[in-house]
Image (cartoon, rainbow, N blue to C red; front, side, top):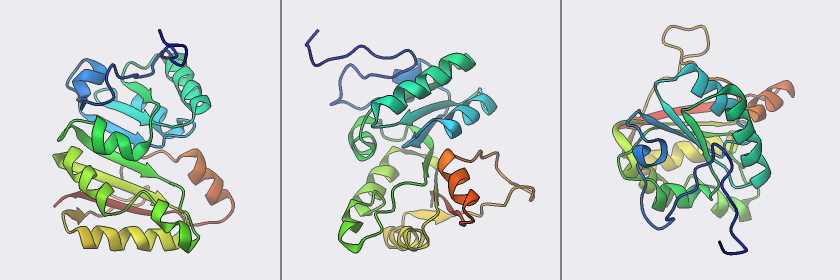
Length: 206
């Protein structure tokens, strides 16, 4: 093993080849629907979703090794067999690593809004990302997005409108008819504790 390599953590998905596409079956060994938590942070959302939906698989994407290890430990403590973590950059995962038509839902929750105008090019939701997203979603797949940043919310609305290949869906509030089971991330809890509003968008392949 090369000196720079490291062994995978328990419950971590470490691809044998980062230059080919991987299906849900490659990752989990079964054909259950695959959901992606893009930038899973401390795993609060990922773990609760995996507990609530044992018939679905959940892959968290996270770049920071400390967070990856923490989420892997959480998966182990809960004894979950339908959750794993991949340490990789988000856009690369969507553009190059995931098999086309393999993802039933992709969650992008409270990403960095890069608020300064000169940094807007670093925002993940742009036309190339949306094209990659469109490629990896199943025909009935969904994209769910949350942000506390009003201007980024408007940015995503405009990017989605310009892309024209998704259809916006209603997202009922908790307690309303048709409301989704959708736990809050640690970031959402933090922003709401400061009195901020978290904006949300839900789309499917239209």
